[in-house]
Amino acid sequence: MRDPDGHIEFPIVNQGTEERLLTGNDFDIESLVRAEDGTFWIGEEFGPFLLHVDATGKLLAAPVPLPDRRPGADGELRSPQSPYLADGEEPLVRASKGFEGMAASEDGRYLYPILEGAVADDDEQRRRWIFQYDTATGEYTERTWRYEADTDANLVGDAFTVKKDRLLVLERDDFEGPAAVTKRVYEIDLRRTDDAGYVEKELVVDLLDIANPGLVGTETSDGAYGVGEDFAFPMQSVEVVLQLADGRLLIGNDNNYPGNDSRYPGTPDDTEMIVLDLKKSDRGGARGAQGGPNDPVEVIGHRGASGYRPEHTLAAYELAMNQCVDYIEPDLVSTKDGVLVARHENEIGGTTDVADHPEFADRRTTRTIDGTAITGWFTEDFTLAELRTLRAKERIPATRPGNTEFDGLYQVPTFEEVVDLARHSRTCDGEPMGVAPEIKHPSYFDSIGLSMEEGVAEILDANGYGDKQDPVVIQSFETQNLKDLDGLTDVALAQLVNCSGAPYDLVAAGDPRTYADLTTAEGLKEIAGYADVLGACKDVMIPRDADGTLAGPTSVIADAHRAGLEVHGWTFRAENTFLPAEFRSSADPAAHGDMAGEIEVFLEAGMDGIFSDHPDVAVAAAAELAAEQHPGPR
Image (cartoon, rainbow, N blue to C red):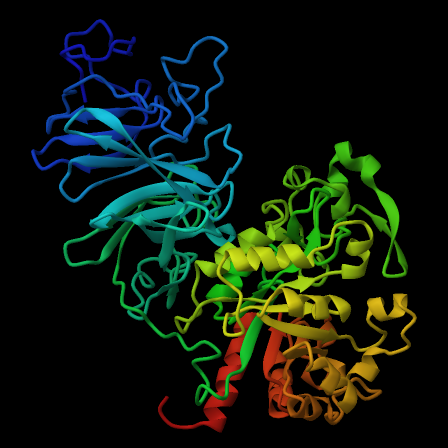
């Protein structure tokens, strides 16, 4: 590339030469569109500028800066590297967050450059702006679109037009290898926006979950992460998506040589290109494994795939979905500023690195939660912005040492992010992905003015969830908040019952009833008046004998079914320490035993749903039992 005609008015590296060759210190070239006349339009990140060059690389016109076309704004959007940035001017485009992706209209007249990251002063940091440039007039139009990334940190890696007003958008995170969470291709339609004004996006392919029935690459890349019957493209910088003439997709990466090692730890990644056939495949999830639509076993990823990743992280939820769950389950607590976030408890000393943050040392305190004094750090003492500075860690590292590899990587997700992830995903059978939020300690949060039920219902409604047929189940260990929710929403509700004790709202009201009372035949009939599902501790359904083996089933499952309730059991975990004695593999508490065998006993007793930390094992167990009960072709 070169500028022999002197179109660039600011100094360049080869300023005093005749050819004026352009270098990576002049422009950060990222996106490319070929025009019908053989010239090229290029999006870059230093301005960010649009560049127009001929087929030999000669610049045809001055670089085009980006005017701020956001509603009510004026001036230009500039990066820290912009040659036009004035002294004292705050750059609104962050470094290296310019035009990573750009598409063109079918007729080639309009370009659609997309900012890779959020504009710095935007109050919605998940928003990515799409602009329109008219190549005929040589000016940006007034039209803009808003694209909502799955998280604040996610980036737009590329874009490509597939038909009139429909674009493929490549969205990625900054993780690689087993730590990767988001490497996705979405399709958007510039003519369709949701109620919040964002273009609607539909998942085309999850690049971390690609079917590979032909075992492509398994011989030439033996032992590479993500290369097998299930294929993944887990590179940090996935930055190319093109639709080929036959409809297949070409995906490519920037290997940041030698910085990335997603395939083989310690070995720099290659630049890879893969071609994807977009035929849908049924990989036999739990629903698809059943004999018919009236005999489903639902698998719920308990706090995500928490046996393999730190619980309640987007990484855990993403892995659970790729392991063919029907639902992902976020436990919900509130921040100081009323934002719902996913944590098992509001005390976060055991699930985040908050203890390593000296600025929060004075937040450590003792609170009484549901009658029990607990010392630590609590979400209700942190704003969301403060909570975002923390990173998740494994809650039970002695039992799950492998999960500690991911400590310190992931933020605490909001409920809205979890719902969006599910809404833009599908089950392995192509059905909408379900969400099963559990509202934690509702009486306590009500007492401090941070009621959560209204927020849960509002977020679900805003995302199109409001009916019984929608794939949502709201859960609680208390009773009154479920009765309140029964008047706020029409989605399914689940009464959780523990192996012992009582709902705290009943305790606080002086009501003597316990969970044991709730699971009598009469108690279950009462539950059926406001809930649809009984979420039962395993021992409520099949208790253990004194030697730790399973005893015979109680009548709870049958009684619940007679009352019209589905029964979901919790929690099925593969480690020996959690298993009945007859299903343990050894005396090592952290070793995996026969969780599938345990699940089979509960399914044969009539249980309808499985909460599991190890969804892949649970899905396989449900499928195997279904094959035995319903032999023959599916």
